[in-house]
Amino acid sequence: MRVFLSHASEAKPLVRRLTAALPRHVDIWLDADELRLGQKFAQHIERGIRLECDFVIVFVDRHALASEWVRRETEMALKRGLDLQRDFVLPVLIDDVGARLGELGLAADKLIHLDASDTSDEGIAASARLLEAELFKLASILVEQLRSNDRRVLLDRFAAELAEFEQVAFRWLASMSNTLAVLSLEGPAVDHARECLAAYNAVADRFIPRLPVHRDLLCAGWRESKALCNHVHRLVDFIEDGVYRGTMFRMNEVLRMAHDIGALADTAQPADAAAIAAQDAKKDDIIGLARTSLAKMTEESSELVNDLTSEL
Image (cartoon, rainbow, N blue to C red; front, side, top):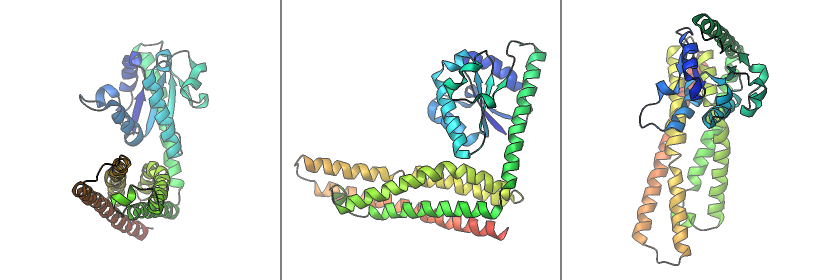
């Protein structure tokens, strides 16, 4: 189990003491330990919350209520909980500010209260035991939820959402096959490309945040096979990083090139035919790479679905 700790810097010594007393199987994500010189702070924290942790503990005191970072981390964690459709955020009160939980969007019925005034070894140990018990309860609920899902339903749901994503992605690529000169002008071709892009974004906005949910459910359902679980992890990572944030994200370069050519035409300046031809070649390369990655995703997912089906 890995847990992200959101807290104000003033509470860091207390947070360290509390979490040091937790069992060794609880892996802690703490900013001072995880962040290295030169890393992009916001992106690293978002990845920690969104991809690397099972739960987020928000330590609430008056300093946390005034911290912009705690507010942003809590917002990300609450959104992640909605995507996962399960309890993900555990608010821990370490100051007498329980009436103000709403300022961070936290619910009082999920709150546990730790007596931060007792900083003796016995007091810290007692608070750590309470924290451990709450984490164990959340983990137990999660395990039962995972076990209760029918494997056939899980697999069909994943396959259906993946097929929808593949379809809209290939349609968007096809709609961008015209030359940049055509894509830079208002007309039916551009209208079609915009419709395809809107459909792709709508599906991706639903599907990509649910990928870790599919990963966790599939790995829980087929937990007896380490090889299949590893395959699930590889495919999910490739879809998110290799396709969505990789070759499909590069399609934004094509949109920028078309926009720039259209802007140049509006100035009535003579077009540089050689430069536009070079940009068209670059566009074709970008689309080609995107098609290749989608084809690989389709092949890998088909193989995985067949392997998972054979184990039903």
